[in-house]
Each structure stands twice: as C-alpha cells, then as structure tokens.
Image (tube, rainbow, N blue to C red; front, side, top):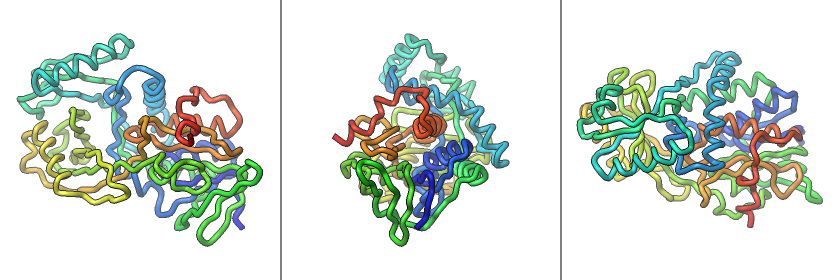
Length: 369
C-alpha cells in the first residue's frame, strides 16, 4: 500500500503545475502518470497564449483566460529560476489576417466587441501587417494585432513543470494504469492501480481526454471527449515570422530555432492519433496561403494530439460530488494558456482557501447530470 496526502492522476501540464503549487505549500503530493510526464496533449500543443485572439466573446471564460495570460511572465520566470529551463515565453503579439472582404467583416466583428470590452488591439491594413511580418502573403488585405498575446514552447514547459514539481518535493509514479478511484461514505480514500493501491484522502483528476474514463470520478464516458488535432512543422530561416499568425482555419507558430508549426485540424476520431493525408493537405495549404515562401521548406515533423473537449467548450475545475475528490480537465484549445491559473485555483480550493475566481461556471455537476 502506497500512502500520499494528495494524489494527482495525470502528469501533463495541469497535473504537474498543480503538483508544483501544492508541494510548494508543504503538501505531500504523488503524481500518477501512465507514461512520461506530458506525453499526450501537453507535448502535442503549439503553445499559443491567445487569450484575446482565441476569445469568442466577453464573459467569465475570457476573464479566466486574461487572468492566466497575466500570470505567465512571473510564472515562466519562476520556472526558469527553479529549474534552469527557459520555456521560450514571449509576449510576441499575435496577428489575425484577412484574405478579402469576408474575412475583413469577420475581423471587424471581433474588433468591435473587444474595443467595447476595453481590450487593446490594433487594426492594420495589409501593408501595415507586412511591415510587421514581411513574409506574409500579398493576399492579406487587413489584420488585427493583439500585442499582449504571446507564445511559449510547450514541450519545454512540460519539462520545466515536472522538474520544478519534483524539486519542490512531489513524487512521480510512472508506468501504472489507474483502475478506479476509491471512496467510502462520500469521502475519497485513494486510487486502485493495476498492480498496487494508494491510500490518499485527496485525489485530483488531471487526465485530459481520458478524465471521464477514470472509474469513480462520476462523469459520463462522453463528458470529456478527445478532439484530435494534427500538426506539421517545417524548417525555415530564423525570424521568418516573429508572431503567431492566427487565421480562420488555423495558425502558424514560430519557434526560436526556425521551425514553424502549422496547426491544427479539429476532428472527433476517438482516441486515434494518426496523421492523415487529408489533415496534412489542409495544414500545408494553410501554410502556403499565409507564407508563400514556405513552398520549399523542409518538413521536420508531423504529429497529432488529443485535446480534452466538453460540449460547452469550458473546462471542469474544482470539487466534485465526493469529498476530497477534485478535477482539472476539459481545457480544450486553451490548456497551455490556462495552466498557471488552473493550478493556482485548484491549489487554493484543495488547501481550503477561497479561490481568486468563482468556479461555479466550471463545476463538475454540469457534466455529471
């Protein structure tokens, strides 16, 4: 029998960030990970911190994203100090380009509500956009520039978080499969594994697309679904683009070594992570439409990841119907962006503090019903 004060199921960015937060307050934390930390969606993401660019409208979810974006400078700096890992965080800015009148109407709608909400942005002509990013296609007729949005290298973030959590005192237990969460009289008692049992009065499920498949959590099997996203990375001269380019069909993300990531498809294909010809065709077409100079670029990697999707497209954060059982999942396209705020809020709730943000909109009960 393994004993732990707090057990976290899942060692991706959500689980590792929460483990770090809790361990830094002196809690005894055990992280269960079936493979290596961050092997799934955390490593497959692109690292966009697009609180404004990806927002669908004003409201509590936008506020949550903005709060998390504001945490990133200090969050990234602290991780570098704790681990020596530079996660590549940059408040680089993000450009949404238009290719003609229909796209311009789309951008005008976005700008209108964001200006009303008091959010900073700049409207650009096509020429102004190319002055910022000279490699952009001549077909770009207008753009919005969100200067406070940014980017981070999510794979480096995974490394930094797991290392920081370990150095803070958290323990990782890899290679085990969770069979079920155990409880008695409405109180969680631990976790049953394939070859072991864990006694733990506090359990938090941070298992991404697999969360609602964890027996004992009390969610229907389809409450959190995998949404496949295919990606392709090409190598181009350094500084071909310096900002994330976010179109109506996807995005381009620059890396410091000259790679440019083109993503992402949105497919409900179960837990299949294959890269398909159709998916790559869409991604390369998007790349060439935005950056015509990429025609001769070397393809260096293709991959697919499974993003945890809920039907209302909101995360699940906080307490469940069982005492001592918590959940942090369903972050969908915003998992990397929401990492620091999700860890902060769950640490506050688990430690008996009032969270900085009202978690009612993200309650477990809305999906359990």
